[in-house]
Image 1: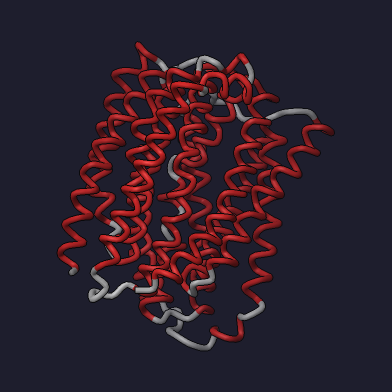
Image 2: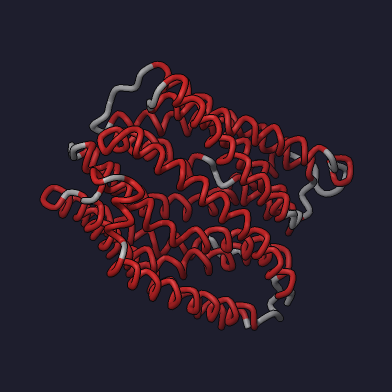
Length: 417
């Protein structure tokens, strides 16, 4: 078991993830102050419509490519050819899903600029995500992490200049996002191209059978991500579908943004663990799961204590200082979201291990029913309690799902010993 290797990559990737999180959060604050609660709510509806089905329509190609390269000797050239072949189909699925989701929301009208920006974002984002799987497969996590910083950094720079020149609007922000993905994809392709000759002649070649097999494998990774996406995003979709005022959706989106700061650390650790388990885990390495379990428990306790103290002492003042007085009502929904978000720490860390071991379906079996529960509670509570009902429904499903996942992880870890 290569714990020093793992720790080195966690430290490096953590530094990059901290920078990405900080940049993204500053962009979110800038957008909230520029657009106000109503504009922030409209933007949340657009982004939620883009992201709700995205984990499924992306077909899990990033994870499937990494898995086949690392475990079954798929060649780099074959993996790239597969990704290019799948990209148009995946982009069409993603755009169709976006149109269907936005049509069901309260904000059914998109102007031409917003629509064109979405059309640009989808293929660029998919291309960038697909190619990142090649870095995960070859354990090039430092390069992967550095490239992840490019997109939000470019987005922040473009957004600042564009808002000053063209004014604050959703369409301007979407164009900046598209430009950021374009630059990140160009740099990513350049970096991969530097060592293309090293590995392109090794491994399997691409056949129709291998394409079908990889797509099927990708769907086993995509489905749990889709189920988790439903749990994360369905609340805003239901609020919009039920006609909740955009300003309340804006307040709730700020609550979600703040609460998910807790998950930025487990989010990048998840990818490090996935890459490590993909390339290194053997059945004889039985201590790794116990180490990971204890590590996640330690993180949970520390962040729970910090969150409790901060909520009691300074959370409301923090919201007002950062976002302005108009967002002060986000405090109550944020307090309801925190227990569920903290519970999801375990899943975010441990799922990388199980997915890397070849057990991505465990998350689907658990969070599929939790998604149904989440939807039911949202439909029950949102009409009466609005954003507070959405927050409570999310927390309940997160806590139950995380508790069941802990039990399943422990059983699988014992079985693998």
